[in-house]
Image 1: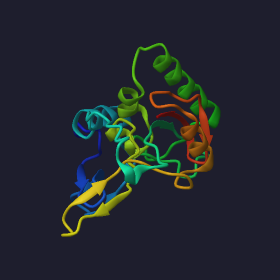
Image 2 (image 1 turned 30 degrees about the vertical axis):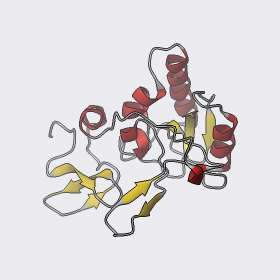
Image 3 (image 1 turned 120 degrees about the vertical axis):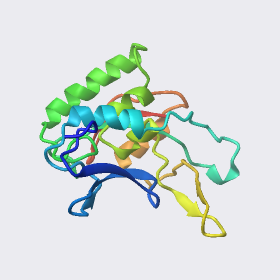
Image 4 (image 1 turned 90 degrees about the vertical axis):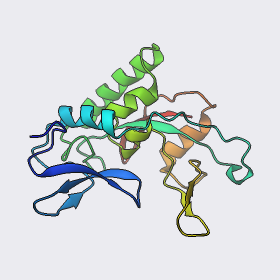
Length: 194
């Protein structure tokens, strides 16, 4: 097992098209978005936080006319076995119950509200979403290819009907800088920061 916590022959690589890390087995040439079975999730969590997360400061971009009617948000997601896709970069197969996920997210919420940690700092190591490497910043992968085909511009903003309804309703109800209470969606349980 490597320092990354991945089984032998597995490594973390970076997708140029998605701008996200993925897992690659050098022996079998298999690639996947979720960690392979046999992964030490605690080691992987620490490795990904150190090597594959962005500490870039989020920009509001409020003066950009193309973002009118849209908002930018970050989130922390805790999945459970009944989530629509019960796997993540942290765990190949998520087996926790919805009740356990709710307890975890409420503990995260208490730490954030007490000022112990920010949502972005916590999302980097604790979120079950690939946005963890961007401190929970969704960026929504709403990217448009530049004129020459080589440059990409990502607004990081989303409008109505681009997210699951429960998530969207909660995010749009927040004022900039506010953190939601727990939000349940088909993906799992979230805390959202606008």
